[in-house]
Image 1 (cartoon, each protein chain N blue to C red):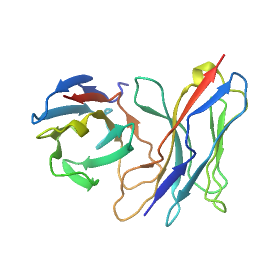
Image 2: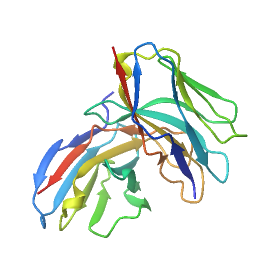
Image 3: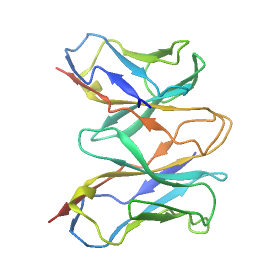
Image 4: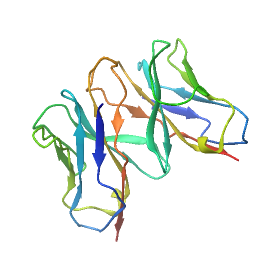
Length: 115
Length: 114
């Protein structure tokens, strides 16, 4: 069974640009969550999508957005990039929502560097 | 709100030493508790979990017991190996109005030296 796949793995952008990251969840998983990981702030929750709807959102500015497609694949977009957006962006999937026992399965992440 | 506090690192041990990484949590109800591990250059992967009080999760020689009375879920291993060098995250998930995300601790970096 294929794991969570994130693309691209590495990318470099400059301030003011925008970026789109992609995540393909494990087959059959309908919930996709996004996290930002930085050395200073650790793992911070961005948002969760389920059935093409954003179900939960973390405390990030509106420059961070996402969407989910009917096949459960998800994208996140960051507009007007800032230096502080440099981070590892992790996608995680799980089969369902509404259960606190369901583990998250993580991809390897997309490492974004903003110059 | 729900939160997880874990001991700050980094932790450096010699091979075969005993490992403890402390984790305490705050939750309004009855969360499930998890330990995730992140090896260099990789995403997080589940190490073990416990879903109710007094449950013990175990995997690859690691253990953690869900202690409701002390709101703790400390990770232990009797004899660490160089290959255990990684960052370890304690996390909780609680069924609630938001049916929300996993809450993670700040992570503890473990380095095991030969």
